[in-house]
Every structure is written in structure tokens, then in C-alpha cells.
Length: 190
Ligand SMILES: *[C@@H]1O[C@H](CO)[C@@H](O)[C@H](O)[C@H]1NC(C)=O
Ligand SMILES: *[C@@H]1O[C@H](CO)[C@@H](O)[C@H](O)[C@H]1NC(C)=O
Image 1: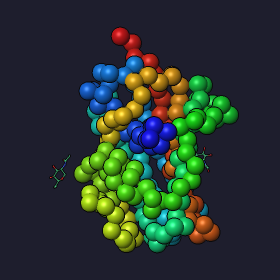
Image 2 (image 1 turned 90 degrees about the vertical axis):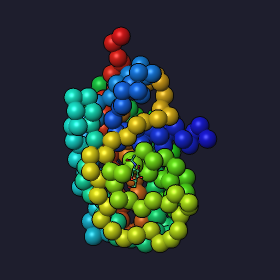
Image 3 (image 1 turned 30 degrees about the horizontal axis):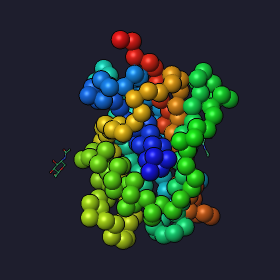
Image 4 (image 1 turned 90 degrees about the horizontal axis):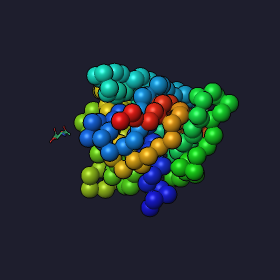
């Protein structure tokens, strides 16, 4: 469980912001620097995401995610968590938190239902499966309005530097999507 949940929660966190109650117990604070994505086939899957400052110390993200493929065993998801002390592109290295490609459909009843949706709450109209996934997954444009996440379950201690999370969703040969979030971690001064 540790090896699965820590990277997934890290990725959830990379989308989000830090609430004060959470900030109080960690030795670090995070500033999101960018969010974005690329699609090899925007008519199959596409997104338009941007960071938004909610208050002096709080960030969120808004935008849309367009899903226009069937959810079947061919749809895979992979999470890559990289870090770089300097922030230079060439210095980003994969961390052990990264996970191998797995079937997206297997995520719906685990990570998606138990962590992603509870963290996002009501800022999105992505489908909810509180009692378990019932196919079909809708083809739709999902929207996000000032989403911020609580980051529960993340390490109390993180090394300073730049972190990047990449979620790579593929349904080959039709489409490959890469959603990327970069943030900076600084040690808090007490
Ligand atoms: C989300 O919306 C539901 C139904 O409208 C409501 O019961 C729930 O309290 C809301 N949750 C949050 C975190 O605002
Ligand atoms: C995903 O996008 C990021 C940011 O553009 C890029 O640095 C990274 O190489 C991409 N990853 C893959 C697997 O395409």
C-alpha cells in the first residue's frame, strides 16, 4: 500500500495547494509554478488547465478536460514524479514514487474514487462513483473551478527543490496525453 498510495497522493498534491492545518505539521511549503497538458489527438482527449491564485498563500486550478474515447482495458495511466534541486530541465530525475503504467479502469474504484474525487470535492463535475464504478465512463467535457486539494497523506518532510508530476494517459494508437504540474518546495522557516 505504501508504494502505491504515496506516489498517487503526491500526484494529487502536486495539483493543489496547502491548507493551513496541513502546513502546520510539515517542514515544507509548496508553490505551484505551472500546470498544463499536451494531447497527440485533441479530438479524442484534450485539456485546458491553468493555475489560479485564491489568496496570498493558496493556489488552485481551473479549466476543462475533454474525454471522447471509450473506457476499456486499452486505456492506461502512468504517474511519473520527478525532482530537480536546481530547477534546470536537464536536472530533473525520476523519483522512486513514480509508478508503472496500469489500466485506468483499475484506478476508478481505488485511487480515483477514494482519493482523487474526495480531494477535489465539489469543484469538478467529473463522475462520482461513491458506491463503485458503474460503466460507462461518460464522454464529456469535465470542468474544474478553482480546485484546490488538501494534500492529506503526504510526507511531513520533503527535500527542497522543484518537483514535477506527470500523468500520462494513453489509449494507443489513438491518443496519448501528458498532464504536467510543476511546483517548488521550500523548507519553512520557524
Ligand atoms: C458538495 O455538494 C454536496 C451536494 O450538493 C453537499 O452535500 C456537500 O456538502 C458538498 N461538499 C463540499 C465539500 O462542499
Ligand atoms: C510531459 O510534459 C512535460 C512538460 O512539458 C515534459 O517535460 C515531459 O517530458 C513530458 N513527458 C512525457 C513522457 O512525454
